[in-house]
Image (cartoon, rainbow, N blue to C red; front, top):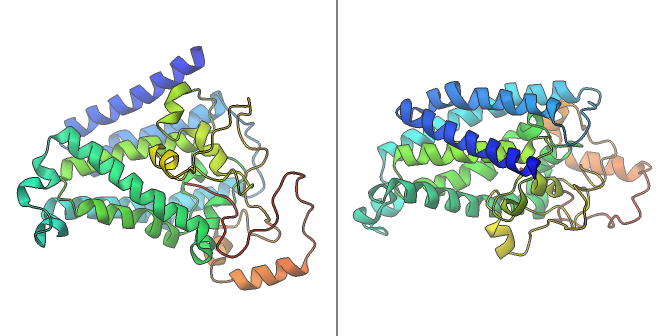
Length: 319
C-alpha cells in the first residue's frame, strides 16, 4: 500500500510540477525542457539507484552505448523536432482546416484548453500505437526498431536507445497528424510534456506500484512486458493502454510475476547489443547479420520460448 501511495504521489508531483512550469514560462518549450524536463530526467535516473526494481548490474559498454544514444543524434533531433513542430502548430491552422475538411471554428485551437490537450494526447497515442505496432510486425521497420529492443533491462538511459529512422517513423508521423487538427501551440506543448513525463516512467527501473492505474497508462509495470524476448508477451504498444485493450494487445499477467523472465531480442546471436555505431548500421547490414547468424550456433531457447519469428513478425517489443 505504501509503495502504491508513493508511486501515485511521484506521478502526481511530476505532472503538477510540469504544468506549473509550463504556465510560468509562458509555454516556452525550450524553458520547459531546461527548468523542468531536464531536472526531472536527473531525478528519475537517480531514483533507479535508490529504489531499483532490478539490480543495477551494468553490462560491458552498456552505459557508454546509452550515453551516445542520449547525447548524440537521437536526443538532439528529438528536441529540435519538438520545437520545430511546436512552431508549425502555432503558425498554421492545419491541413484539415486549410482544405476545408474541418471548419475553422471546429479546429482544436477553438476548443477548451483541457480538451485540446486530452484530444491531442489520445490522437497521438492512437497513431503511435500503429506506427509502433507496425515497427514490430513489418520486417523492414523492425530492422530499425530492433535497436531499441536489444537492451536487457529497462532504464531511463536506454529509453532513448533507438535508431534515428525508427524515431522519425514512430513519433514524427503521429506528431504530424496531430498538427493537422489546428491545435494551439500551448496545448501541443503541454500534451508533449505530459507524454514525456509518462514515457520516462515507462522505462524507469524503479519498483513502482500503480495498482489499477496500470489499466489506464502503460507504466513501467506494464511496459516491462513489451520488452520481453517472447513474442506472445511483447505487446503493449502505447502509453494510454485503452488502445492496447481495444485492439487486443494488452499484456499484464496477474500471476504474481513482476516482469518477463528475460528482456531483449529473441535471438541476439552476433547482434551488436552494446555498440552504438554498429547499431546505427545494423538495419543496412541486416541480411549479412542474418547470414552470419544462420551459420553460427545459437544458444538453446528457453523451454517456453517460441520458434524463430517468420518474416514480418515481431521478435520483441519496446518504446
